[in-house]
Image 1 (cartoon, rainbow, N blue to C red):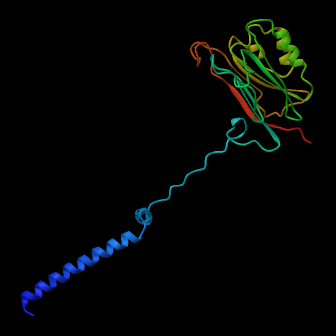
Image 2 (image 1 turned 90 degrees about the vertical axis):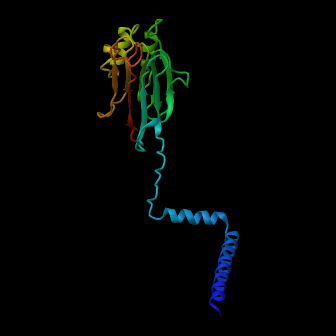
Image 3 (image 1 turned 135 degrees about the vertical axis):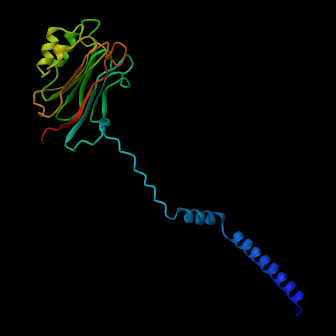
Length: 235
């Protein structure tokens, strides 16, 4: 074969081979689904990358505790009011006993009485300490709590202006150390027991006074709270 003819033959053969390769690739692309190709490309790109681990969302605990209470305890949370619109709350065993949503929170001293043996609420009531003569009814309400009762008390707005001596004595009899320190719009929470003793490690009371230089809200101190796990009565 002459040199010129041989060169033309090689060039034609190269063109033919290129056309065959292109056509073969076209057929392969038509036969393999796009999803498989995308997955293959993704897998190739992912080689060497560290897997992303997603932590599961934390499980909500009773009364919004950070950690769960042991099975043989009651979960509780007492939160005082703060400002005009942040109402007091009392939660016991994940049930909101006092709060704006329940319609049971108002200005003054809010009280929930709970049966310590069963964990069931007996009664809830709010007593306005700024207007009206409500110290007498509050004193009688506290004294009406049966033995083996828990009394959970929280303030919203003012809880001191019309607080009488008899009412202070009734709350002192339950173990309060701060009731006589109450001032205008003091934030106060108190966990009390009637007819039995609370464990020594249980936080029972907290108070925060109004201070024009330190108030979180205009005319009001910050909210305060106590929470914990209260051992049930041994069966």
